[in-house]
Image 1 (cartoon, rainbow, N blue to C red):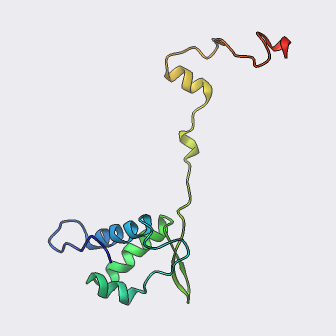
Image 2 (image 1 turned 180 degrees about the vertical axis):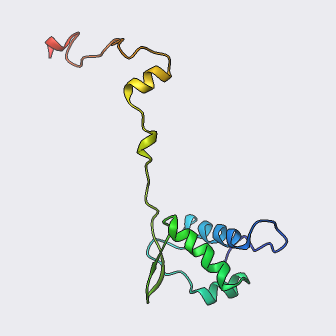
Length: 120
C-alpha cells in the first residue's frame, strides 16, 4: 500500500517514520477526508511496529489536525485547519519602515474616475 517502509536501522524514531508514512498517505489522497483509517492492531501488523509507536504517530497527526479520534467509532481523516499566526501580520506602517520607505509619503494614487478624488 505504501511506497515507504519502516527502517529499523534508522536513527529516526519509529513513531516519526510511522507519522510520515500515514501523513503521506493522507496528503497523496490514499485516505480522503472522512475516511476511517485502519484500527491500531491492523496498522501494527501492516507496519511491523508496536501499539505505542502507532499511538504516538496517530496522536501527533491528531494534534496537527490530519486525523480525528471519535470514541467508539475509530480514527478519521480530516482536513487540516489553516492556522494563521496573527502576531506575524504587520501593519502598512511596519511594512513601509521595513522596506526603508517613509509611511508618510503618500506616493502616487490611481483614481479610477479621473486624476483626483474630486473627479469621482
